Image (cartoon, each protein chain N blue to C red):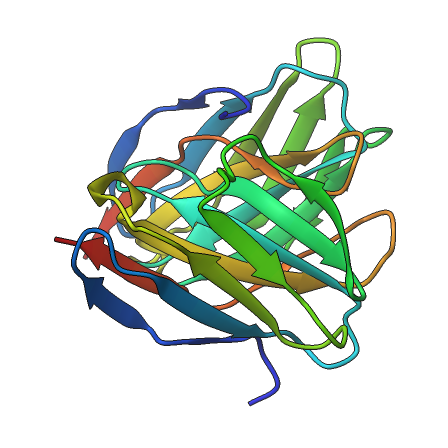
Length: 110
Length: 114
């Protein structure tokens, strides 16, 4: 079953704008990861944030984690057309499997 | 290319037939995972191996599904007596056995059951 909800389900922005996606989860976690999936292709790992971290940066990506609210957000700054993809959060709790949300579809218009 | 590979990329079959998919993980990765993804949803966990041992199976993995990793390297996923509801993308991933558990995904096998 899916871990939780991602919000929004779909997002359309202009190139150069920032995109923010949110993820909620249900159980305690060791870490939370964000993945990107381009149309018809496999998932690519973007960034991992541990449960004892609150914020993490990687290039144009900024991830926050609020374990008290069981939520995370992914910010993509200065978006590009190539950022068009589906974005998924995934949690790792007990055990080793990833539990994914339903994803946010991001469209960046040039 | 040293990434995760999956074969075939596409499979069309008739209901009731058996199908088998193969996954070749990144060579030094001792963990291998299978996920299933349907349209508009995130991937759902099916099963995972550490070396050749199958350590966890989802309740999604009915008795028509079987997975093996005989020598701790490549893995196969077999679906017997396929049903239309089995139509999905089947994703394989591999990782090292570390806490952070970053997983590397293959391109997937898209199964269509007619």
